[in-house]
Length: 380
Image (cartoon, rainbow, N blue to C red; front, side, top):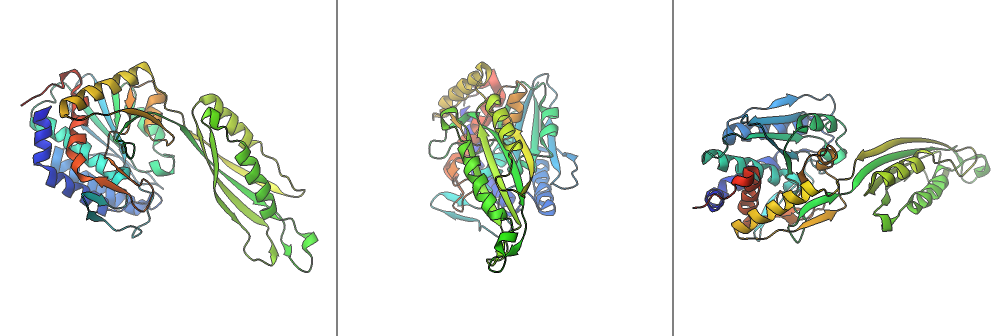
């Protein structure tokens, strides 16, 4: 593995240049035109570095999904990632400071995609891909729950020997992610009746008052002892202070560690009834990602990652985390899946989002070693 690590370190400036180029192509999830422009930059990187072109899964509302394939071996390794971000265009400025690169989506997860490209390039340049089939699955809507890509991802990952998810490592420790919570998103629209707040408030039915009752109920569903969280992250209601509000909207995020809890939470939210007479509720949403649980196969993959890291001169641990990823879908298919193999850094979904530049080459070498599997003993 030293040969691969040395190659990647020798090309560290080019890898960083590619990361900068991809980060500069801003790609907020709900802006299809911008995401597709970023997808074109990503396709150019694949063509330039690996000599492959994309199979494009065109989408009407979200960005197009991209699949890249190398080799034709019997056992398939999937490298999984996404290129949409949570940031609107112009919201963050890319900058380099104190050995860190800051920018929109640099950690989550554009650096990881570039590291994976270079991991495969290192193997390709050393003629180590014989008998191996490598598939990159790059989704465009992960940050909004993968509504258009989940079935596509599952279809192309099915039957794979392993899935390596190049989402960022755990902040602070650089740990890999061996388990993730399942996730859900819901929206409740509350319909009341408007009235003048001073002249005839008794004729109104306040959607905002109903919203308060529903927020209290929703947060009562939390069960931390079971790893379940329910969070009302968006609460909007009314449009004038002197009007009894006739409409309010709640946006709800759910996280669970088991299918049983997913079913409980879905049933509770779906069957919510109004507290105030005359209120009507419109409820939509679902548990969008199943939990990613540890299995003997995924733990074996984690052990292999530790062995490869040791050859590379560092150590890694495994950790269960609360956030979901597209790795949840592949793990649910029974495929050995290991997450957190992307960049190290901190600030996911925060304004200080950044990667640690010195870790780029070693983490890319770790991915290369996992692709090699039992052959990961290249020295030099």
